[in-house]
Length: 184
Image 1: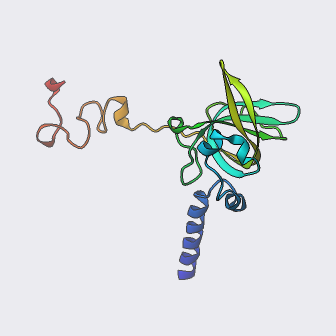
Image 2: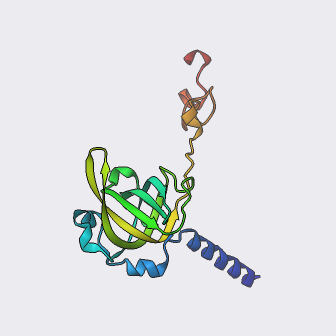
Image 3: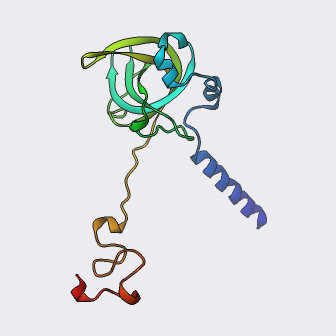
C-alpha cells in the first residue's frame, strides 16, 4: 500500500514540475546565460551579432516571404517562467526570422511569444515617418503562449456572492441577515 502512495506522490510531483517547465530548452538557456539584455542591444545592435538571446513579447505582425517567415515583436521582459509581461514594460521592437513557415493565424497580432536564437545583422525599417533599427534574431526555438481566459466572480455582474436580494460580500446586512425589502 505504501509503495502505491509513494509512486502516486512521485507522479504528482513530476506532473507539477513539468507543468511549470520553461518553454526554451535547457541547452539553449545555458548558451544565453551571459547574453546582453534587449535594452543594451537596442542601443547598438551591430555590436552583438552572434550572441544567443532569449527574448519575448507581443506579436505585432507575422509576414511570410519566399525564403521564410518573420515575426515583428514588441519586446517585453520575461517572468520567471519565460512568459512575456505586459506591453507597458516594453523597451522596443525586434524581428524574429526563420527559413520555415509560420502560420499568421497562429502567430497573430496580440499573442505572446518567447523566442530563442542568434542575433544577426540589424535591419532598418520605417514606422510611420520614423526610421527604426530592429535587432534581428534567427530563430532556434519559438514558443507561442496560450490565450488566457478572464474569470469574473459573481460580484462582477452586480449581484454579489449571495444573489440580487442580499448584500455584497460576507456581510448580509443589518445584524447579519438580509436587507429589508424597502432598503433597495
